[in-house]
Amino acid sequence: MKKAYYFGVDVGGTFTKAALVDAAGKILSRIQVSSAGFNNKAYFAETLYRAVLRLALEARIPLRSVRGMGIGLPGPVDAQRGIILSLTNIRGWSHFSLVRFLKGRVPFPVFIENDANCMALAESRIGAAKGASFALCLTLGTGVGGGLILDREIYRGPFFLGGEVGHMPLDAHGPVCECGGTGCLERYVGNQAIAARARKVFGRDVRLEDMSRMARSGDRRAGKVWKDVALHLALAIGGLMNVLGPEVVVIGGGVAQAGPALLTPLRAYVKKYAMRHLKAKVKITAAALGNDAGLLGAALLAKEKLGQK
Amino acid sequence: MKKAYYFGVDVGGTFTKAALVDAAGKILSRIQVSSAGFNNKAYFAETLYRAVLRLALEARIPLRSVRGMGIGLPGPVDAQRGIILSLTNIRGWSHFSLVRFLKGRVPFPVFIENDANCMALAESRIGAAKGASFALCLTLGTGVGGGLILDREIYRGPFFLGGEVGHMPLDAHGPVCECGGTGCLERYVGNQAIAARARKVFGRDVRLEDMSRMARSGDRRAGKVWKDVALHLALAIGGLMNVLGPEVVVIGGGVAQAGPALLTPLRAYVKKYAMRHLKAKVKITAAALGNDAGLLGAALLAKEKLGQK
Image 1: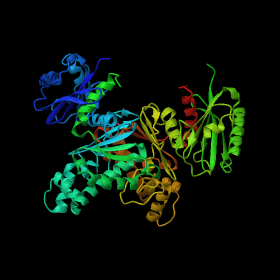
Image 2: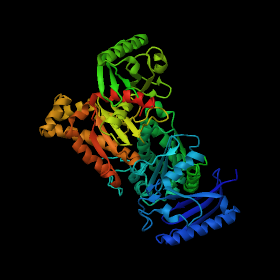
Image 3: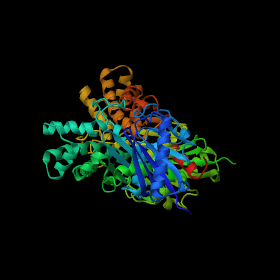
């Protein structure tokens, strides 16, 4: 069989990344463009097509060897019907039949998926959860995204909102969340919540990167902030472990760069909340694919949807 | 095709129930025996066989029309290999290959499953979640059992501990649970926890049945106890809704007999914790099959395992 290649696209509110990926998940060429103007759908399609041509040219891959394209999006997606259900970052894209729109505008099949689900797929196929059939992947940043792999498949749920770990309530009387819930995990471990806690502990603004560095060099106040983040994460993760029993929990996103300052207390706390039978079984680990997880997952999605496992 | 029948067995620590069930889930005859002595496995097999003969005779169904038997057990079960992984109520049954043991001792195929999973299966096929592909079923009693139906299948997870909703941690600094976790839901809504809360509110022992009755007739103190139970349940259910998005949440078990005193505040609280998109979508309802859910689920399990959907 001839070699097959796939495009992976990761649409963000500010930037959109695209890459040409081989069947093993290796990135051959990549590009990043501004997402400004994507509310004009024709402009988006044009930009995408130009990116495709450039990526193929750069990697010296003939376009006819590209089997398909996967697109990850920062909102709930009806992956079966190819419709974006809701997207706040780009005007006019809610309820947009993106797959139908791109038909004929790009010369291969297109598949779409929620971006956290793409990341989970990539980590479970070629990343930190490789080999695991059941994995829970968290992306910690401004928001807290989550993706679930159950029995080797992305779990979407009946309403395509599967895996929203960031919106597990942790405190009955906690702050109201913009999702409509109350006391959500995101309110305690999202970037803003961590920054606010750091401000309290240090009496001034401290950047998260600096707090990671400080924790690494043994600063107790920084360690305290990360421990508190770990405790909240552990409550949510512990609950999902006891209900779903994933084999691997993958922690990714910017906040995860705190490294052991976050992961060491997280592992200890999760042991506190997990059932006896699970304590030793579940592996908690840092994401392996970094910022490329979304891109790669989108490309792998296209590959798997086309039956090329 | 000739009519097919199945035996459903629900093994409890004190009593074991068995029934002969038709393909539509109708119970034709039933029996209850003491579980005392089941640590003697030969005695168990003998008792089971005698029950089978009697149930068939009573229902006037020839034994050759019985296609198989399902057995629900109060512990984690490796349903694929037919092994009980852990059982505290009956001595010597942990790591017991029950299916292999019964081969030749009963004249049809035997399938085993965790009892909460059996209940969830029954409620999702012929009970309160009928027609739903995704359902979360809770059984409230001394313990808090849970069963998950995802995409019409029982969710077992990689370690056969799937659905242990009773062990979702609700409070980082809560009481240690016998499961090995901390602050588990069961510590707040299990029978003993409710009885303890009632004792505090009323200044004396009040039976749960009486508290249900009192709440129905408008007693505010009883209502307060049930509201508190509802609040804790809502935190766990809200979290699982946002992650798994079940279409129906079924509340069963003895405690659920509180009826609207529990369900009305539960629905209100779940709305507080669920994401906006899910608030109106998820139905929270009382179990429909009562104490028969385990039996029926075991029989339906056998039916489905034998490919007779």
